[in-house]
Length: 631
Image 1 (tube, rainbow, N blue to C red):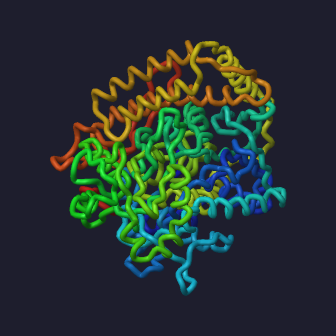
Image 2: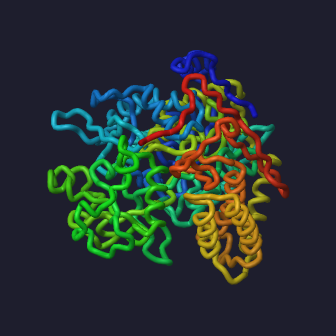
Image 3: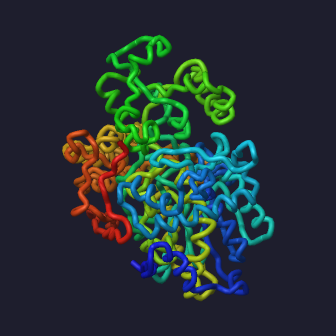
């Protein structure tokens, strides 16, 4: 590893200390450097736009036909920032502490504090771009509360915050495309990372329409391709979201960190049938005004309107009176699962009820959540203005990802990883409205400094994309595609993906045990062997072939699933979203082990051998880990 050291100064001064002493690339020289950016979500689009504005030559690649279709557009509830507009006691320190506590003290202090610092700049930047944040009657920006906080720090644009922020980043990106500093390459799938002289200096991509393999070189690669939640098959992620870019960089030498830290979101529309291919998130912001409850009578089949308040169990308010319905996602999800397991749910769901607030001020509810209510009705056929929503947890986000240092660089020099693709800021559980904050912080305000610090030590010579390393990568990609297309078995890639998702959800999901994890490892190994023996991939390498795309992603999921499960098995504690049944308090709360597991788990790929696990200690100098109590 070649880590960017964390400055040896007080916590609140570390980022300024880094910026004051990092190496710089002069404006006259920036155009001599080529930077390759993978992904055009909030992290990728903001990074490409900012680097283009600075004068670097940027090549940006995305799966979709336009950057506007990146999955960041689906984020609903809001973005956190420590502006304290509500004058309710918020501060950079409090956002830092809420985030590190919400992650169950499994994240680096320095990275999380920097995120809280930078958050205040993001809002001003986005307002200047024209992002239409909600405003109070007098014109000031509005805020609402999110889980794991007792202040209102979440800025929002109804239930479309991700869409509006992405349009702001997209506008900034396309301005640079028009200026000529950024070249956009849509409908490209990342296939491989090219390492030359020990540094990331190129990529291999496949044009999804023509099938042609293309090679590009640069002095640095920025990976902003999102997380791997779709490994569970059913998740709230767009179906095009996948793990392949992260996983293929891992196989080239980038270490994977905490892969088992997978967030389950408590407020999702429940599964409705066996043919379903994805799930739909209902924003956490709904828990500001909606109350979550079940009947006190097991198996109650009455209409919710016929169940009087005295016979309702508002279980989150009962269990966690200090935070109520706004407890963090991991805690809410487990509570929902527990009441359903005990037979009190509405099948596999609970009620999210707005009747009290609607009776008090319906126009306000329509203004804040109208588009979310409409989406829910279109999907379920039920009108939430008249009857409570039904919700159940679903896979939503991953805190694990490629390991990065303080400068967001992976263990491969020159490969930087931004947004959900890295592990750095959320620990074992992400607080709501922090994903958008991290993506924009990484792209707009952190990578311009840390990338410049790296490039200042690199000569800007032209990269020869026909040298041996590129030729080998192209050949290996050809071979991989040929192997996938040779599959003429009886099952489609989707059938294998569905089986994998069932294994992971049942045994490596909200609740995990040593017996279940060992059984899952064996099942995943058997499924991986069956995949290569019995998969059927139709079509040819040339031209559009979505079966080939999907098969490659499922092959990557199967390999990643083994490491994810090994990581869960090795972490013999419960923390955040990782709940081991053997490690819980008498009240059923997670039982953390700071003596043995106050570290980041790092996994190194070894071809044909078991992966190697190592550790990065988490040394808390400013805060002391404590029992995470939301009661």
